[in-house]
Figure (cartoon, rainbow, N blue to C red):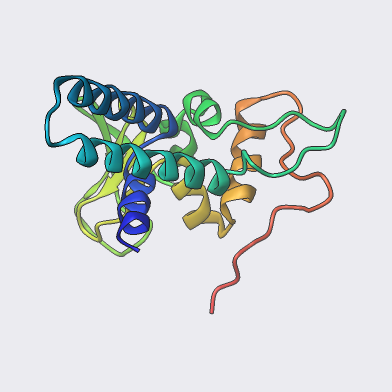
Length: 180
């Protein structure tokens, strides 16, 4: 149970390339500790196991482990889609943004306010409202503003980025999350 809790924390806080890098570091540290006869070998092996579980969970959650038909559409890589999307342009369609240093600032669309507390950080490809504490990346923006699931947001953003063959599951259209 504890291993799954730690793995879910890793999944929520790190990208797939970061998880792979941590796994390599943990495995190297475990091997070094074992060669030196140190007592912390079990600790590093446990961390490596947690990182492996986190990678598997992240791949499953992001749709990498779903079966693929031969000759079907190409798999969408969420990291590639995120890199290609201009977040300022995407959010700027719904929110009037003004440059403020390295960021862009505007009124938050998620709550009523008079003073802008909504910021878009193009360097980090993230947004954050310091009034209502909502924030995230392009996927979170599309899911929140359009009411789509992650797979629907992935398809939408892939089309926006102009990726060829931008279809996640051609048999299933993107699902909208209906408000309760």
